[in-house]
Image (cartoon, rainbow, N blue to C red):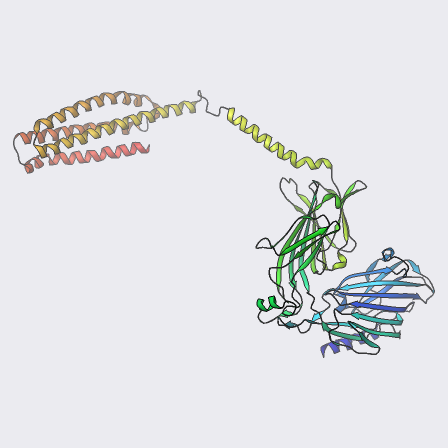
Length: 610
């Protein structure tokens, strides 16, 4: 009901649009190709000037609902059957807003370079390619269901000019048609539906038709494709293409059975995307195909001197609404794509994707030029959005200029060559190698200087002398520390002799041990005197000397207390006193010895920390 209402309103709009009467279309032959997801409408228009004024343009009209899906539009001069197709002249086509026309119509102007005089005629071939013009119906299907789509069009050619004779042919993928509009002069022949001929149609004549048919071809849509083309003057052009792909057909519902798919893939997955074919340039090399997980091995590559084909299979068959992302990359010989003209270099390479069956919603082409490129310009066969950015790579100083070209609704017809012109000095090619050589050279020179240079501090400097003095102090303190370790060892030996006395009662052996220890302590005292004199004479020892002197005093006091204790115990044994009486006699002395031993240990720890 909503579609009928929109159609009624559109017909009312057409009746209110003014008529352009200078031109008439004596014959219109339209052919609509629905065999792929991109709808291609080829119209052959024989234009006649019935007015008296020279006409320099021909207007093409499209409803806004149709114009928003228009991806590609071109008009060429039809030279006749005897002329080569390649010799046809393409005319400029621009969007215009004629006065008095309703805003629900979009007009394109085909400029005629010579103009069309009174009574003259001209035959135009107009090719219009539409993306997303086929709508799945039903919108959701299960795995074994076939995919049906709907296409809306007018059986009468929508034009601001009167049409004498016109016909329409709709070519479908196969003869299985669900339904189609049956109006006057409608015929069906195999996979083609023919409307017309219709005669003497007024301007803006419109007769809606709907074709509902089976279309199991995959609807591969790249929501975004980023192509990065990097030029290296050392002989290579590296191309990297990042795809975000979605199946734009009828949405898949229900469960997916891989067993059923493997058993009957053409029945249980007729509309699924099983593989894609990328047609690469003939001498492409170093080709890879991977995704976020890693390399995808389900691909086949073959080529000959004329072409290279890469057949890529996703990790899983893609049904309606399913998505995937992957990257393909390859290298190309520089001499096949980079040329010289008028003092400039220019890259001549194709714009679109090498996968012909993909419709691209947004295509971003990045051309990375060598560092130092200047005076950059772009020549494209169709309008594109241009920008520039900078990319930094290894050994770059100011970065590499990157030309960014962006276009929406990209189809197979956009896969044409474009050119990027720039100036580049051949001497700049040696910048990075020289930078690398210089870097290694200076590194080796620095290593040689480091190995042969004397980086030690001067022996006459105050800091060096102070360091020597401090080293001497540290050596002296270490010797003092070793002497006190020997003293403490002798103290322990003296205590051990008392324990042996309590066990054996041998007084003479105990006296001999004390005499030996006393002699050794006197020798150690002689060794200590020159070390103390050395520390006292050194300014660097001012911080540690008080502690060393205190340590010497405490150790001597400890020696005296130990000797007194030893004499008391030996004398008590000679007098045959009991063990408890001996302990009572030396209890006070033992307390003082323990306290002194703790103080000596604390001083030694402090000296060690310094």
